Length: 83
Image 1 (tube, rainbow, N blue to C red):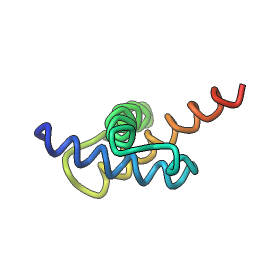
Image 2 (image 1 turned 60 degrees about the vertical axis):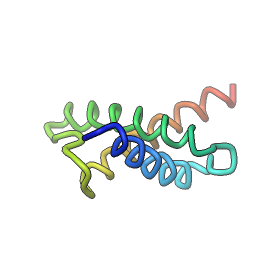
Image 3 (image 1 turned 120 degrees about the vertical axis):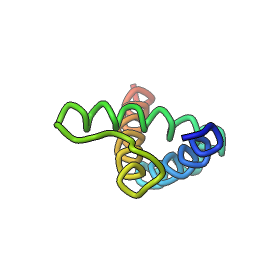
């Protein structure tokens, strides 16, 4: 995937994850992109540990993997903020 595709993919995954975790009001477009891209890496790692494949391109499965990873990332961030 190209850089523009990663930006769009990251923004979409980060936005969906922020809706699930309740962080949407605090996050802007740049934060959504960063969380989505980092979340795709985390999700790929998690799914790789379980025998699945990570992000395979611009498709629904890869979006699911990225959103799961972004939710994990935002949950960890929320737990650290509460301390």
